[in-house]
Length: 358
Image 1 (cartoon, helix red, strand yellow):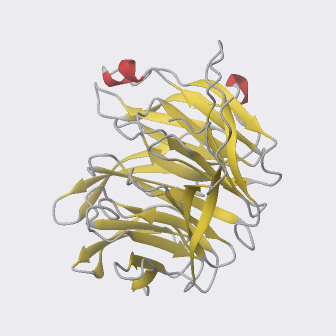
Image 2 (cartoon, one colour):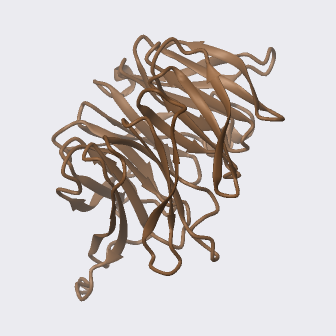
């Protein structure tokens, strides 16, 4: 994708209000926002609720279609749609993960997953929707098998982190799980082919050019051969792996540090998300959003990345989450903040600001 010839701007399409406390996390519903299907977005908050927003075909604005409440009794920290869009998983500080089923726009809690000792911080579905991962302040990562009739069976409890686990994220095509933590590391977990047990196959830490403080989030590019992570150390790091080797069943194909982006945020970076066309968005405690793309200058020692755009004062307070729409035909970004709002943005070429050809 060549972004060199044009100037871009991040246009605010809508500021969505409704939550009564900070908004922690966002999730676009798969299969929405294209082909005449209205875009649907879920958000979760310190107000103990999850809200489902749908874009009106007439006005283009997002309206609240459902409030999922009276299930969690503390902050809802994370939300994730299953790949089919039929189920929504929500992780809460009340130590539970709730599974909601969408039946014609009405959401019912069909399962509650218990086991973590205290706050659950993140939830993630694998690509096929057959596995669910959760993590929490109890330093553990849980893997759940999705069974018929909305049953969930814990198949593994992974102990390896020495502190609060902030996020779990499945690889976009392979059943390999990634977790990041207050212990400054990213851990990569794979199933042992011999005994079906999960184990840590690699730890990315300071000794292999990793982060020097809490790792808050990570995200993958569309092909799954690169990963981006962000941290309390004010850096964004790009990692790469041999995807062909991983696809051949070698889950131990190591991830290597490729690039570090520093100096772009001056407070903790809470969220990163890689769009399908290769744009990395970051959101931070400096109330700003930054966008990065791979530089055209191909270096001998691997790819480099450059700032595409900076949006100061994207929100009035910390930006907790940034999430690109999964539909390639629109460059739509959602952000969530401590200011209690969700914002919808569109990345667009600045009108009349085309760079002169050299």
